[in-house]
Length: 284
Length: 69
Image 1 (tube, rainbow over the protein chains, first blue to last red):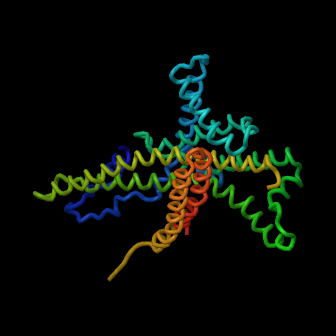
Image 2 (cartoon, rainbow over the protein chains, first blue to last red):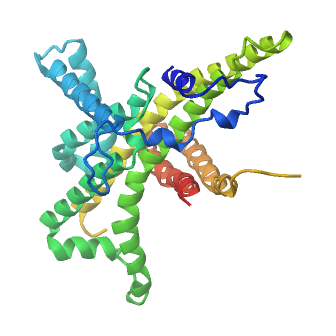
Image 3 (tube, one colour):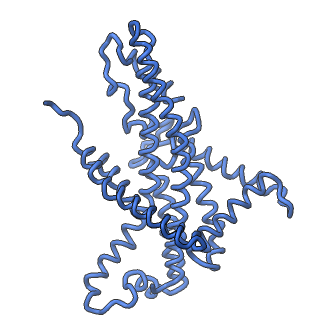
């Protein structure tokens, strides 16, 4: 548990029932977890330099590339173990996501969605790998870049399929509405489609990962804080009991977090396909 | 009585009530719909998850605002 090791190295002797009357707020993790010290800085404005996030991003890219390389290296009609896992993933996303949202035309965007799913899932899962424990998507820059990519694709597909006017009119004028209500409806639709959708698309994995990681860090730090064998007599037994409870909660929530990570990646591609499906459809 | 801490957290707690009710309604009614018509399961699950995502983001926006305001 690297969070504990981190606090052991950083904090002094700060425990429950300790002599120095130390409170939990002195060791509790804060949002500073999400602003690691850069390894290398270039002094450019609005950049953070090369931080732990960059390192983890490289690791996740290599993991995803390695998985697909190993899974498709000897592609056969009768699949091997790894190849059947990859095939299950692709068919699952085809049947549950792209065909549901975009119909047969969605098969063209299946590779994009599969890549996005696995990439986001691995970036999220970096949060529970021992020793690393920082989800890459808990920094807004990474989901924002992916959401901008989907946003650009969405506009490009709509413009290519229906022309500039067709795409933008189709997005801001809902079909079958009376004319007199349009001045009221069009600004709302513009704000909804061109601002709220991409922003919330990026915000969703970011906020879910930020809150989940903070929760895990609080439980790990709490387990460490309450573990005090040096307390006098019976109190040390009590402290070990408390710390055990916190660590059990840590393990339970780690499992729950894994589920949330997969769900967030799934929801991301689900919404991406639903946006692309809208753009393919034109006027709605 | 002295109360210390940040008012933003209370605001976030209040902001999470609505999405909590919403997510509960979506999955409750979704399960009910699947129970009534089990063959429509695939379609309903997709719609449920989209509704869930749109509701959940309200709570997440609240969380982000609690940190940045």
